Image (tube, rainbow, N blue to C red):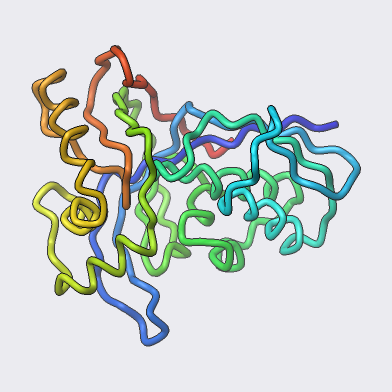
Length: 233
């Protein structure tokens, strides 16, 4: 058995620079790897199991697809710590951990699995462009951040679709998807206000949501203090 770490990613800023003819959105983002991570146990076999017997979220199907992409087969048991649907790349991180284990390093190929998988494969801190496959590594900057994760997720396709319907608004806080996410899931606003009231800072949305974050350590109920790390796992 091999034990793998699958660290979460956080999108610190996100601009949408265009839409391809096939509907994929082009991005210009800064992403960092966090010390919040899932743990994967890999051994001989042919299935994906969530520890505790939970159902496999669609994100976790990325593990099966990552195994197929790398031409490998395995039984993978996942201990989840990254909340699904929180905009922290949990499924992408798990897929990237499998690709690293399999010795697969083609970021363009990894983009077939999802826009966040190439960054999760490389990790650290990077400028991410294209549909996620253009990774420009940046110098690691140690950061402490506080996350507030609502008890519900946001659908990334729904948020992008709403962004298109709204005419492609530019977010005022460094994330172009924030206005669309607030329309798709209005409950997000109460969690943003709660984090801002607790910290005195302007909260930023993580990717397409649902997590909000601020710089600094503000431990408290419903909040998670995390740090950035220089590698992907």
